[in-house]
Image (cartoon, rainbow, N blue to C red; front, side):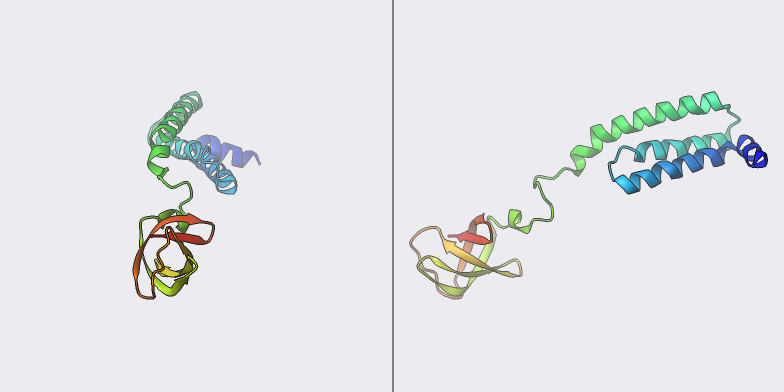
Length: 150
């Protein structure tokens, strides 16, 4: 066991690399986004320890500074870049208003079926119009699984 400790003291690169791996494993397990930056900072300190003769206090200081700066910059600049206008990227109904659709079943009593974006949807008209099969309409709203068309 002392041989392993002596190895890590002689080669701090491996100690920092293992710390980065632990941070990264915890980050992958939790998915919070907070431990990604300490993992990257530990890997960077490992490279610094490999290239420059630094001591443990200097490495810990570099790790602390890199972690604080990288976490701040990521939270400040990456979050707005990743946030989109839609609250849920996987919800296709948020992209339907304004899209053209084709009537595939004639409307009766204000209800029918339309084909839009590769799917057939139940639909209702916005006014008293009764579009016939093959007519082009526009989606103006979504209420659950029913589209409102004009």
